[in-house]
Length: 593
Image 1: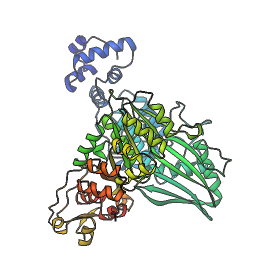
Image 2: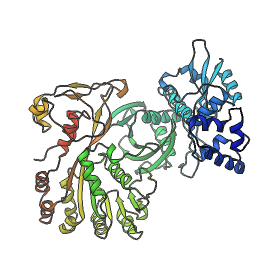
Image 3: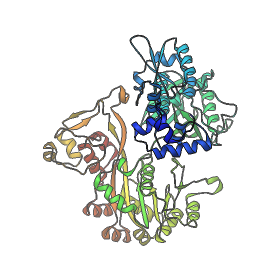
Image 4: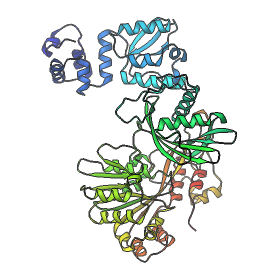
């Protein structure tokens, strides 16, 4: 588009792009003037310049282009499940993504409606008409929404088939050297093992698996996915393909395929159905051959805030008061896989600001947080939690996150940092909050240092959430209500009123949700997880018991007298709020003797 002064096109009778944006989209004339000036200097289309300057959004541009070309415009495309599969079959995904074009419906007259971002791209429409062997009707849609629909539609199309993935000559190397990732849905290769492994990865991402376990047996090799914390079998392959499958995974992870006697660790990064997926790979020798565990991390997923991880309103107030303190230590406790790292990231996201210098040392760096310096430990070069933490103290930090306190040296440096004006986040493996205090003392830390540096301990577990599509309310037995620590009379009367938690559901009085099972949740009855928590804030009583080297049970009893909510009772609150089931809470919690 030729750049002209705003006054000129305002007086023109032709509906130019800038005129439409000002008249119908609320864009200020000054914004158009700014974009025109930039266009004169740098060239390009006016719409692209406006987007680059963030003066308009993609939907506004798509509407204006459609209005200008007298074409239909859609803000949202149909869901991927509603798009006829034969349209995707006839149009190669490479072509669809390259030209950002998506056929999405067929009218009763046989005309195919096609989403495009640029109404002037008539050559592409001609090509689509030839490929589909049909008359096409263009509809203008923003390019981002077209690409998202392409990813979802073609992922659904290939969900039950083996994926194909073409490796570049150097594609087996770790892809962190700045190369652009290529979606495995876009590429083709006829090698059966490559197709089998890529199918494995794609299906895991589609089903929201957190881990993939490849386990050689005597007669075959089995694969299990961990979904919402529970393992289930995914597929099997004949025994003779075990070596090829393991070699393929090793090549993708940059591991030594000849080394089969020692454990190895690596990483894979691939784009799968439009998502950047980071995978941690670990191998270990077993009696039947090497087994492989792959941890999947969705790099495109949005990190959760404290309000999104299942904390109730009263706990949120306490947590936000703790993490705003200028110095001290907050420990998150729980077994492996209980969501401790997610909670720490949520805390960091909550306090992140340009005024704070935040440093982390982790094993591994699971998610990259903008504005935070993150270091991954490497024992091979003696970069441990302790050495990383000691180095951080020379970088003028305000907040430090230590992935885990495993030994006395790390604990001592963390306490030293907290006592010298820094706030430290970390984790420790204990069953409850009170156990974190005794764990530090058992490491050899002086009780007076523990009492003066710790400000709080948060124990947590993850419980599965009932599927919204199939869960149904039922009246639980009185014994189940008592096991949750609730009064049956109060519960059945619907008189319990707990602090609000994000994701809570309204249930009929005296009922809880029961998991049923449907295609949406893969007939499991659950979909997704939430946290249950136990926050122990150190007060005068618990500090005195810490100084006296009291056991965890005594400290826990004192905390309960001070109003601490236990893991089981927090789970009971979430049962009443329709966020989980009694069975889940009973399975992951245990009352102290």
